[in-house]
Image (tube, rainbow, N blue to C red):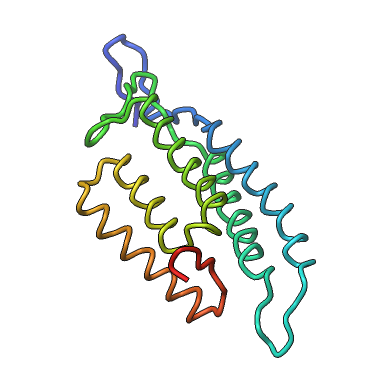
Length: 178
């Protein structure tokens, strides 16, 4: 059995293996996430425990630390495995609308401003009012219709209040509502 000749007259060795491309962004983000998770875990374990089998204040930071490590490692492994690229490969087609870099910065800035606003305003305004305003601002910035954002923000605020105060017995700031 002889290999077929290509259009240049040289034997074609069949499909060649294309090189793999490492995704540096995923590699760096995954490594940073895993390191952050490893740093969080000792702090979470070192927090005081509540008697009678109830979880202490370190429960959620511990869970977050574990997930940071796990998903960070998933990103690192995925980045190192890379993806095959053909020499002639063009940029992949993007489905749906694209978001400009400036818009991405605005979206991220609104999320960070919402977190800062919650830290500053929650004691005064209370959990319900503050989280409703934060969710409303984030959803409107991300392009939701105002009435959908308002209904969702109120529903999320009451659902979180129910989960934390009734289910987990965590006292949230009362502020104006209390």
